[in-house]
Amino acid sequence: EKLVPAAGGGYEFFGVSGSFVLIMEDADGARGVLEGAGGRGRLSGGLAKITITVPGGHTHSDIVSYVAELLHGGGIELVNAFFGHDAVTVILDERDAARAYDLLRSQS
Image 1 (cartoon, rainbow, N blue to C red):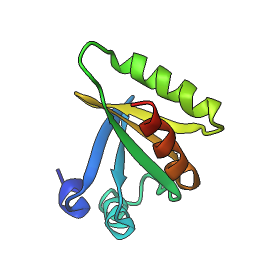
Image 2 (cartoon, rainbow, N blue to C red):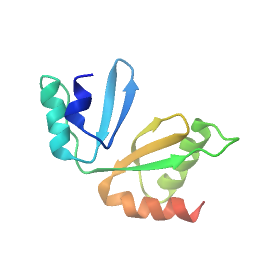
Image 3 (cartoon, rainbow, N blue to C red):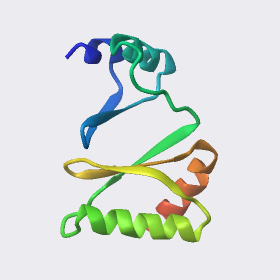
Image 4 (cartoon, one colour):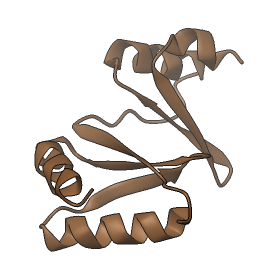
């Protein structure tokens, strides 16, 4: 509750095994969240996210497996992946983002 006002708008929140991941584009907002949490946590920069809508008839794990294999074949490694209700968000190095996006778009 206290972290959300510090985050402002434009964030994604994922709960993971006893902790959480907050994905934000605004570095100052992210620092504010960390300060609001008493300095616990860590800030990672140089990352990019791509959100993939999961089409009907497919499972999240099918999509992540396919995306990971496709990107790996293109020399791009995932840093992490998070599952939403109807989408999968993949995190990768910022330097690979444009190439990953192009590769994924070419398969849609």
